[in-house]
Image (cartoon, rainbow, N blue to C red):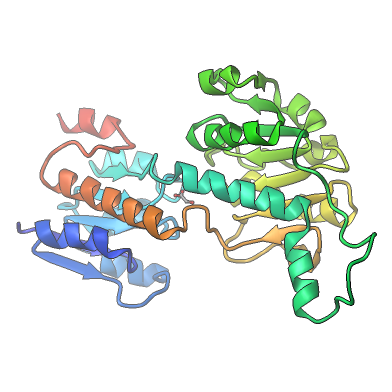
Length: 327
Ligand code: GLV
């Protein structure tokens, strides 16, 4: 079909195959890196559609650069805080995301961080590798138990619920905060509480809300001060949900025990002082990073894009009001 699409960075072949099957022209950023602003603006020009990533800023200028024939930007991520939805709707451009396929994978990673921080896995690994271990010691690397403690889930959507489900095997007490009750979490004995109560009572606080104006710096100095000094904070959602400078301060002063971070306020830069701390485990935004899940995300993003190009309603359309504007 005479579609001309652009893919902002190499993605798993499963997604590219779908695009190649349905489009005449599929151009992929030849470099395995984020495009610069100017490169992005030039690359999207006169495309029917774009498959983009969370590292691309899709604002009004980018949407305008794509030109009037552009039907859709398919974001290969569940989060879409990198996209100006209102501008897209105004321009009649559909925006799609990839929900569901990365839920369990991201929940696994939140648990990996929780266990790694509590049991000082990364610190221990560094110690061992650098040849400093002289043998077992009764006082070495004493951490915190995970089993039978209290887990606080901020945001009981798909991923928060999947994280909560896993806590049953650890015999944990479960608290969550969400505007709506979660049937699934309630069924496993979780209690819905306000954020302050959750912060005060939890041994592990894990964040699973989308980033928007309401959740920006949801966890700041005041909230960190409510947490127990033995508690750990886990973030696999979006960096700016935490005031990272305030977190560095709290970790440095041992006002909380530790943090496990997959996302950062100004990716890829850590806040000053963060990486010097021993009580934080930092990984580079790997929530959905498994072979199987990234292939599913690429497939889903490509299918969304192809549907939009064919004039169909993409299965994972985010700015639904674009349809009203078009009819
Ligand atoms: C990853 O961060 C995603 O939103 O899919």
